[in-house]
View 1 (cartoon, rainbow, N blue to C red):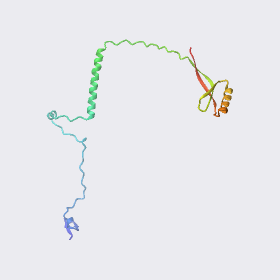
View 2: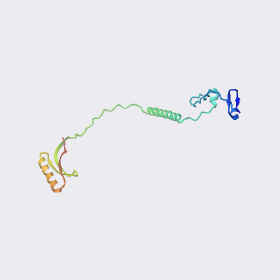
View 3: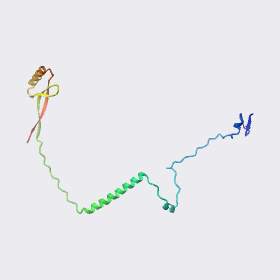
View 4: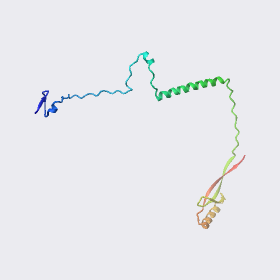
Length: 159
């Protein structure tokens, strides 16, 4: 049952013989152009006047709104400028009088503290030995450790 089609090939079945033989070259795909790259054809001048404008994009509307606001601001500034007659002479800067904070000094003390960082006793700086004795006595009597730490307090003298 083999039959020849176009005298070149032998086909096994008669159904395949009915099909035309395709050429070996591949078909080129048609180019698809995006909407941005396609340029519209030029319209006559008379036709442009008759055609309604397409709705504007949000960006175009925003730009127009900014231009309108700028125009309003210019009008307001022009009105304000017309109201002003003569500029006032600048005032001389006034000198501010500030109260002196006085001399701020620090005085050192020895503080005896418990575990909760609560100050239990205060001694003059020269009395460190007394502060240590007090901390040792409180540690033994209350069964909680006490310690000695340097404390600085602010002394203000008004001048």
